[in-house]
Length: 87
Image (cartoon, rainbow, N blue to C red; front, side):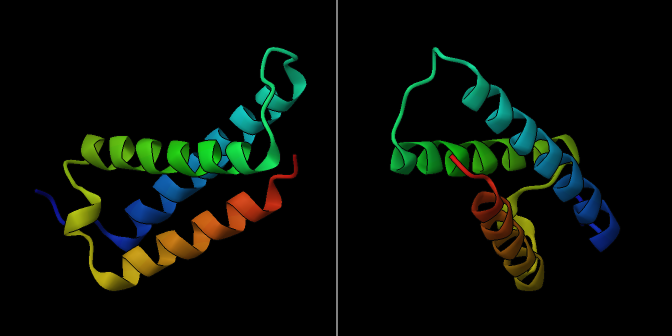
């Protein structure tokens, strides 16, 4: 496993935020997706986790190999992203 730098993590989080926001907009604009706010929030949260792990794997890393400060930063960013998405 590779050691991930703060800069690399920032790049991942920026990309991930754009990806989640775009997916959310597409879902909200598509009449095929009907779910209540709680289910939508759960789905967004799950997608964040899945996409984060895939992006970390692409960098030959994993959430389990990050230092606690980086994990805390991810948690804060996830919270901010999910709170800013309005259903």
